[in-house]
Image (cartoon, rainbow, N blue to C red; front, side):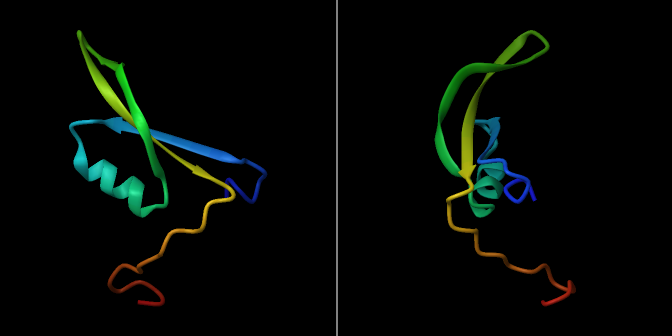
Length: 72
């Protein structure tokens, strides 16, 4: 919906130590763009963040329906 509303670029970031979030981002069509060192602060700790982005001009990701959903 964001691209339909005129947005050209979507970004997301996740902690580098979270490979599950990386898989979700990649499967949703977001390309990995790099690591931002010490970007996220949680309490007294800082964490590196891997940034992903998706452009309106990127091909749509393959969609796999969940079991039991419409079209599955």
